[in-house]
Image (cartoon, rainbow over all chains, first blue to last red; front, side, top):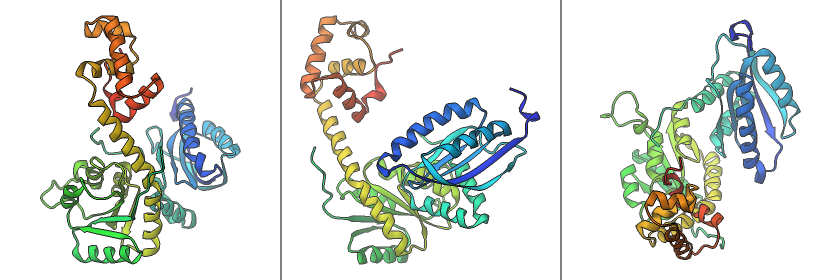
Length: 142
Length: 224
């Protein structure tokens, strides 16, 4: 791979609706994460995924060719629908150190944060900071 | 195993703010739910040994003034949540806070809180959050009961049988266990037979499941 400085660093933030029945959603997320960790590392893609039970939110960043490829793959994935871009563009530097599952669960508070970011563009940065905070947790005792 | 019925919908409230504690308590009771108010986390902790499984609504009111200015992780809302879950892992903990920071929310959820509520609390947001808490409670209570039963069975094993069990769970062969414990292979086989009998199990898969439940898997003999 070429040194990263010569390739523009792109980013994409989207929200989508989960199309998997609730009973299977937990298994789906497990499978999806296991798959994504390896593949994203290989493609030098970093970011975080959040699952509220009904919606997915994902921040992805990395070399633009790899990002475009992953974006096409994600758009074809039948496990979700109604993909809506909340933010995209280029970055001077990465906001995530690696790729991880930020949160998967039934929190109504997080679901409301996602809804707000969908309807109000100025709530989008809060959503990104939320993903970052989940991705870089303060160290805690085992 | 039969379905576990959580008899009454109980909400435990912890809030050092007297007025807010009263308001939330009344709001919860108006919903037809049983409600027990506590003024401090310490008071709740004291009662955790005997109170009913339910939702725990905990107000995060910032770090205590005598604590270090830089909110340490063991002073934050995460620590508050863990203090309950360490003793009662089945409780559905919900953290409430006024103007919470992103860090407050993330810490609470990462520590195992099922949700977060922003003060002032409104009935329309409170009710679905409590309903969600109660919906996951039966499975959590059932799991805790299985853990409790499994842990009780472990105490029937002799120290030697517990050592052998950790070896089995770590994936060691009978020969390897025998070498480690400086006993004969036949003795290991005998111990394994006794373990299965005492734990009322007839296959290795059940034994591994048991080991996961009781946490024995985390302290297996080092297989390396």
